[in-house]
Length: 336
Image (cartoon, rainbow, N blue to C red; front, side, top):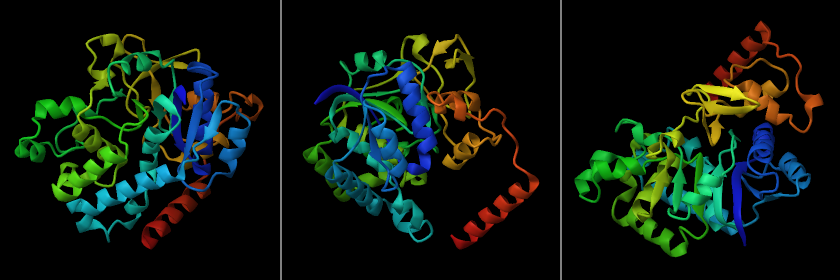
């Protein structure tokens, strides 16, 4: 087993984002740190070719682990009351593969950090490794600040059971786009206990109705139920550790291709391009002037090893192209 490493989740559809993330890890974390790519699905031709060119990057091969987590997610969805009500209206939500990221708990690294593929690493992970000496989960996000209506967990319902109070629940809320943890958490025995709670104790209803299909919402249920020590940098008593991370929301300052929190120039762990599609990034990499905040940072890392391929000029799409895309989206919506 390897002591420390990084996981991400990818396929050929997010190839540009994967390359950018790997290059940012190489530049800003450690050029030699091992990285393991968990397959989102079987579309992996370009991903495999890229991995072969990188000596420190591997593909996750444990299919039984992937199957275990997909089965756990399916069983959870089946048990959730909102899923039962809306299954026919939203069948595509039952085909998501984001839950595969939890295979990291069965992987080769004793301690690890998971990065969503639509992220760029901005600094070394020293603080994460230090916190993992004291905690089993380490996060860096602001999910705990969301309203009860938008929170991952149904806080009033959980409070009504007497199991937790809101003051106990809120500091434990988190996202799943970036986290540090340890191998072996959620082994077969622990997962079986969670499944029993979901099936026999109406535990699935603890997850907010608007996110019954979401891997992050399920992850919140898992970490709350297992009741292991958890740390979130956005709740740190040290103000220097509290920063933003979302490209579409938080203001940053760019210095030498690295982003810092605008207020106080505090270093950030990563920038998360949440809300932008893989299609947006593919078009950007082909020279289209796509509306993505901090796109110059993304292009820098995407073409870090191949600067000659980086678009020299970004051009807006033509009116004809925009019209064609509108018709295509409308047709797809009708088909759904």
